[in-house]
Length: 496
Ligand SMILES: [Mn+2]
Image (cartoon, rainbow, N blue to C red; front, side, top):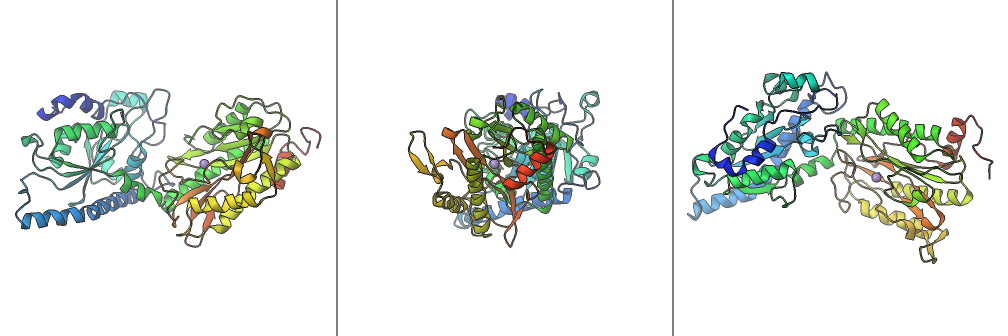
């Protein structure tokens, strides 16, 4: 490392070492080293889009500051405010990416950092200056001996500026010096009236060890005069609305997840362990170009079909079981989330079919009820609950008491989806064009070892909903036909 820590960093040297330019010790996942260039990556946002996101974030921060800026000017006019000192900065936005991760994990960039940069190199950072529009990306210096282990990564310099679209790409070795130059005058030990600093986790909880928390502690210690604010809500508000390029990545993730559901249809039958289906699912993900599963795959048969987040996938599927398969491929950080419920032997029993059709009716009611800019996930939940309550079907609860079916819908109807499978977004706020979310009603009759969940992914348009997963069959007749066809028309067990 060619940088000398400034004196104020003394007490925080440990943190500095953690977030500064550590040599990479293990590789990324073999995808091109971040560079979101249009030529190299036909799918996904362009570097112009990433640059526009950073500009939009700076605009949001400026608007948020407009009030407090006006106040400061008024205080100065009244003679009650502090004299701004030379070197005291205005507003600074700082984010750090993920560091190296465990040996057994593929590198996964922090979602907010990925959203603003498109860069998936460990130990990256960025500084944005809203007033001037300046932006800089910081990358670990290139290390040729490390390149032999993990392959070439982009490093500081003109090439990375070209491929990422950042105005400047510097070495992480100069990150802290640049940061404190922006945040406050280090000659005063950071005690000058320093900048307003927008950070992720600006007031970290004592037990938080994320790179963002370590950065916040370091900056606060070095520049105690700064005003520290949370940038995450502003980024999350932006992340909620998906661009066309993001929607294309989600469509790809949905398509690969559909391939995996088709593999389940081919492999499912009594006598097969749940994990064999999980193997088929993960195989389809990788074969389809997904980087990984966006969340642990749920393959729950029989009694496990009623366990909402079942994940052991260790039971052997039995004749007469329903099997809940809740899975999502992740493509360039974007995750799909699709659940289908299958009869293990290829035929629903009359009772299973009744419950299945009610769940499907609930989902269709939510689709029909949807109005862009008006509906919320909460309002759709109520619509589905009404359908379940109105059904003549009944089942017994844990105490043996007969209940209407709404009693057995024991989770939320859906959630936003994107970089996170449970993405940023509020279930009580109206869903507007560009937002992507799931509708996943379910009924869980533990006493009958009978669980059904049907989950699809939707993008809000100005007229209504685009069902992204419409090509993945959920109609019960179609599901039976497909399982039968996969077996060459031979039922796995005598029809009942
Ligand atoms: Mn879900």
